[in-house]
Image 1 (cartoon, rainbow, N blue to C red):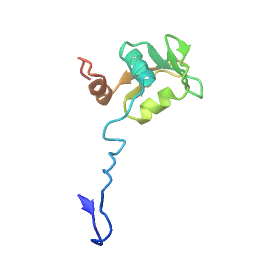
Image 2 (tube, one colour; image 1 turned 30 degrees about the vertical axis):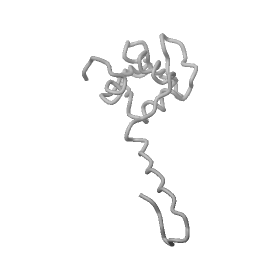
Image 3 (cartoon, helix red, strand yellow; image 1 turned 120 degrees about the vertical axis):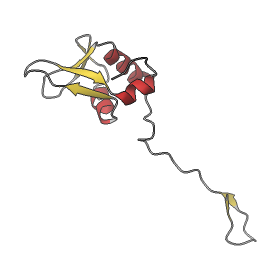
Image 4 (tube, rainbow, N blue to C red; image 1 turned 180 degrees about the horizontal axis):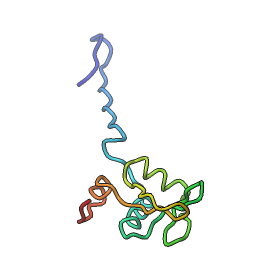
Length: 104
């Protein structure tokens, strides 16, 4: 489809519509690695006020990865008793995105 208001002016193609970010979340290789750690049961979120993402008990080098993946709907937290790290689990969207043979 082209735009042509005046026949003397050359027409140009319409830009493609952008897909919404919610249509399919883009994940970086680092995010994919974090999601695989969550799937393996190796990730938790500390009980500190900042709620740092821990992998194998060590802080994740990307301090925003946990919050970013929760906001994207790829990971959720399971509440634990006060003072204990929260467990993390994948959502159905993350399982489908990674193509894992598991179900929620």
